[in-house]
Structures are given as C-alpha cells and as structure tokens.
Amino acid sequence: MGHTRRFVVGTAGHIDHGKTALVKALTGVDTDRWEEEKRRGITIDLGFAPLPLDGDGDLQASVVDVPGHEGFVKNMLAGATGIDLALLVIAADEGVMPQTEEHLAIVELLGVRRGVPVLTKCDLVDDEWIGMVRTEVTERLKASRVQWAAPVAVSALTGEGLDELRSVLAAVAVDLPERPAADLFRLPIDRVFAVAGAGTVVTGSTWSGTVAVGESVHVLPLDREARVRSIEVHGEAAQRAAPGRRTALALVGVDKDELDRGDVAVTGAGWAATTTLDVALELLPGARKPLAVRTRIRVHLGTAEVLGRVAQVRSIAPGETGLARLLLERPLVARGGDRFVVRSFSPVTTIGGGIVLDPFPPKRPRVSERGLSAEQPPHERLARLVEGAGLGGVALRDLPVRLGSLPDAVTGIIDLAGKGVLRSGDFLVARRALSAEVERLAGLVAAHHDAHPLDAGLSLQALRAAVAASGEPVAGPILDLLVEQGVKKLAFEVAGAVVRRPGWKATLQSHAGDSGGRLVRRLAAARWQVPTVAELQQEFAELAVPPLLAHLAREGGVEQVDQERYAAKPALEEFRRTLETALQEMGRATPAQLRDRTGLTRKYLIPLLEWADRQGITKRQGDARVLARLTGATDGS
Ligand SMILES: Nc1nc2c(ncn2[C@@H]2O[C@H](COP(=O)(O)OP(=O)(O)OP(=O)(O)O)[C@@H](O)[C@H]2O)c(=O)[nH]1
Ligand SMILES: [Mg+2]
Image 1 (cartoon, rainbow, N blue to C red):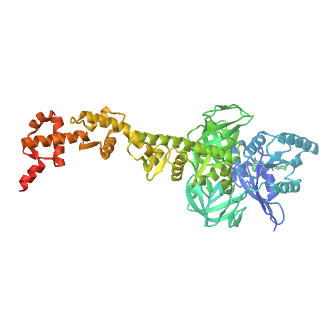
Image 2 (image 1 turned 45 degrees about the vertical axis):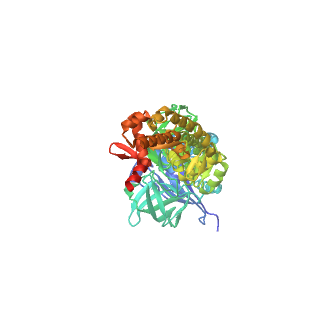
Image 3 (image 1 turned 90 degrees about the vertical axis):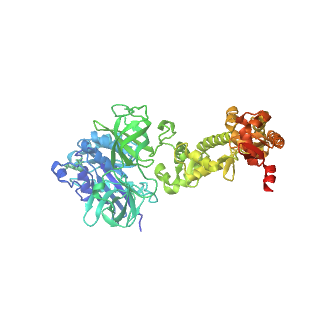
C-alpha cells in the first residue's frame, strides 16, 4: 500500500483572475454554487472540490476556492486558515493587483509554508508577455516567507499547463509537513447546515488530531458536548476524521441555529473560549498608521472574526513586530502558537497579524513583563507561563492547548523547563512563587509564636487556609508542595497537626521564662492586691498574658483565683494562713472584720474569700465566714 497523502489547497488572488475557473478546470467542479455568484459572475463565499493527483488515490488534495472581491476578504480568511498549500492565482493579462498583494500577505501571516504561483488566462497574451509577468511574479515572491514553486502558466479555457500544474502540486505535496494525528482534534467550523436524516452538519478543514464516529466532540464557545453520528472526509463517508482534510461532521446534541462559522469542534482537555490573548503582533509595512493602544481591530483566528482592541502596547510601527494583549469583544477559541490576521475596523483592510503566545493570560503582569516571545522554544515559554501563574500554578492537562504542543511532548518540555519549575501531582508551580510564599508563611508561624508563646504552633489547617486567603484558589498538590518546601528549607517544621519554627520547643522555656518571670514578679509584688488578667494585659501589652498565666499556673508559680485573676502562689498561701489564724481566733468573721485584719479593700478581699470558699478553707454562714473544717467537724457530730 502506498503512503497516502491528504492536504488542503487554497486559492488566493485578485477578483476575476480566474481562481474558480482554474478549480473547475482541475476538478470538474463549479464551486460558484450560489445564485448570486452565478448572476454576478464572482465568488462570494467559499467553494470546495476534491482534487485527486494520482491514479490510485494515494495523493488526494481538497481545494478551497476563495473569493477575490475586496468585500469578501473575511470569507477568504475563513477558507485560507486551514490550508497546507496556496495557489496564488494571477491573471497574465493584469499581473499583480491589490488583492493579489492582500491575499499574499494573509497567506504569509497565517504561516502557510508552501505555495504555487499560477499565471492564468495565458490564452489572452503572447509568450513574451507571459515571460515578463513570470519575471515580475518571481521577483515579487523572492522575499516571501512562503516557499513558492516557480510560476506555472495555464489557461482554464484551453487546458494548457494544467498537467504541469498537477505534477508541480504532486511534487510539492510530497514534502509538505504532515499534520500530526496524535494531537488534540480541532475543526474550525466554516459551514453549518441541517441535513434531513443526518441532523446538524458542520464542515471545515481539520487542523489537527482525529475523531471517530460515535465519539464526542466539544463545541466551543457554545460549550456543549455533541456526539459524532457520521463523518465525511473529502466528500466520502468515513469512520474517522483526520488532519489536513476537508471534514464534515454530523452532530447529535446541537442544533444548527446554535452554531456558526467561527465556532470550533475539539476533543481533549484544556480547551476554552477566551476573550484575552497575549500575542506577538506584526504590522504590515503597507499599514497606513502605527498600531496604538486601544485601536479597534478585527481579529481573524481560525474561521472566526471577532472585534477587539489592542492593549498593553506603546505603539507598533508599520513593518514592526511587538508584544500586545488583545481584548476581544466576543470569545473565540485559540491555542498557543496559533496564527491570526488583523484587519482595521474601518476602512476594512488587512493591516497585520501575529502569533498567540498565551491564550489564557493572567491579569497581571502585563504582556511586556512576562518574558514571552514568538521565537522562544516551548520549554522557555512554559517556564514563563508557570512563573506568571503564581501560586495558582498550571495544570498539566491544560498544557497541550496553552503551549500548542503535542500531548506526548509535554513531559519532555517540562523536563527542559529547568529548576525554576516544580511539579506536584498534576500541577506545575514556579519555585520563585513557592519560595516567596514559604517565607511569608514562616513569618506567619513566627507571628503566631509571638502572639501565643505557649502554643505548640500554628495548626496545619490554619496555615493552608492562610495560603488560599492570599489570592487565587490554590490546588491541594501545590499546598502539599509548599509545606514540603517550607520543611526542606527549614522555614518551619511540622509536628503532628501543628507547624512551628524549627527548634521552637527548645526555646520555649527561656522565652516563656523571661516574660513569665516578669509576670510572676509583678504578681508577687501585688501580693493580695491581685490585679485582673485584663489589667495585666494592658500593662504587658507586648505579651500574650492569658496563655502565659495558664502556663505559669501549670508550672506552679502562680495560682488561678477565679476566671479573671491569678495570684502569686506564696502570696495565696500566706493569705490562707492569715485567714485561718483570724477565724480560729474569732470563730466567725464578716468581710468588714476581715478587711481590718488584712488591710484589703472589698475589691481585693471578696475574690480571695470566694476563692477560699471554693478551696474548702472557709464556708459562708449568713454574711460571715467560718472555717470549713472546724464547722464541718462540729456540724457532723
Ligand atoms: N480567456 C480566459 N478567460 C478566463 C480564464 N480563466 C477565467 N477566465 C474568465 O475570467 C472571468 C473570471 O473568472 P473566475 O474564475 O470567476 O475568476 P475568480 O478569480 O474566481 O473571481 P472571484 O472569485 O470573483 O475573485 C470569467 O469570465 C472567466 O470565464 C482563462 O484561462 N482564459
Ligand atoms: Mg471565484
């Protein structure tokens, strides 16, 4: 079995230069189907025709015929976007004309690699004239970034040159880069219609990947899953769609009225409609004025045309390329590395185009500060994207779309991204973002120790919550990595459910001893005039007084009197002895009598008496107190 080649050929060229006639002469198909096209003798919308290039069907092209009229460049763009090879059609009697130039620029901006210039209507001119036009065209295309074959002179009328054109096409096709099948399926939709029995049919040139009958595609921006009921490739029923081929999908689960040219059918993860693109934007040398910030433009990407504005750019002069952020008025579907064309809002002319560097840019930083460029290899762009993502990180599953890389290549790209990119589970996060956060968290842990010097540390749960509170949601694996890094860098240590400063336990005694000693000395000086915890806290504002007192009570230096008071242990012992002596002498005593005996005002005396009651030293008898033990012994007899 021979190696089958499938590719899409697109016409390009000025109005009336013979594109449709050439397609008809090559394929036998008249692609001007519409009544208006027939009546006006011009092409308005895209036409399609299969073009077999050899006898056994191994080499099969599909032709997209586009309109040359300057009013329909928008349709031309929708057709030119998926082509592998351009046929630049130039009428020999007219030569290079305005839309020859515009279509040439579009084909270049879209990154079409190969092309064949075709000089048509050769029956209308003599050989000498053809030679002149051939020279003019060859000269004009010399500087083009498309690799052009030598011009082929043909006549659709006489059939002259058609065989030569076929063999040139076949020769070029052999070294066209094959679009990889092991990629995400993507079909930018150029037509939508309903077919009785088949339901909703969408067509387009498959850009990448494959999908089979019975599988599902995701339709965007609609955001809907639709099952593929049947497939046609190059007009024939097929089990599977493949890249570089004209494809029709009959879809179940979506209505014809819900879809439009510009929508996209895809498979795989990471796809989403977007209204913001970070791009490298090129302004054509022929553009009439520089592209300044806020300029309203038309963005053509895939088969979509969306209005938008240029942001975050100082100014791009004609002939220059610069970084810009595009803010779109409606969402479209883009992938990293996608080419697009920009037309001015009014008058509508093609002014430039560019490459998508990031289809999902973060709000900050600005595109100019992100270190992105159209020239950098994927692993460098990945490093920049991950850095820009901060603690939110980048999900692995999003990378094929975001970078525009083959799914199989992603692991290798990550390996090359260097030490700045860390992986945890299915996420990538920048080492720099992690380090900054680890430092911040170490600060939080330290602050917690200061505020709660006797606590074992900050709870792990509180630490993780503090990360989330700092901005965008942070995925579990990234939180895990943060804690791991913090521990590795000795920023903190994890003990059970608690995070603490490394060696925190060892410093506990001396740290508490110092502050605790001050409190103990203060309470000893107060003796029976016991201050409240609130008063102490006011006095020792820099200390966390309540936990410190609780700690000192556990150590035995102080004793809790009631909810609001702690007293120095020796002072309380002394009060107990004084009280017992007084009551042994007096039998019973009122607070007024005890006030005289102790020299304490009611404010200080009452809490101590109630403490003694609770301790079982004293007990109340009316408004007086008696010793609990003695009365107990007396009463009990
Ligand atoms: N004599 C002669 N006339 C031709 C040839 N090819 C096209 N024409 C005529 O040129 C006119 C335009 O041809 P089309 O094929 O419709 O041109 P087109 O480039 O498709 O035009 P648009 O799609 O509207 O841009 C028609 O009247 C054709 O019959 C040719 O090789 N020889
Ligand atoms: Mg035409």
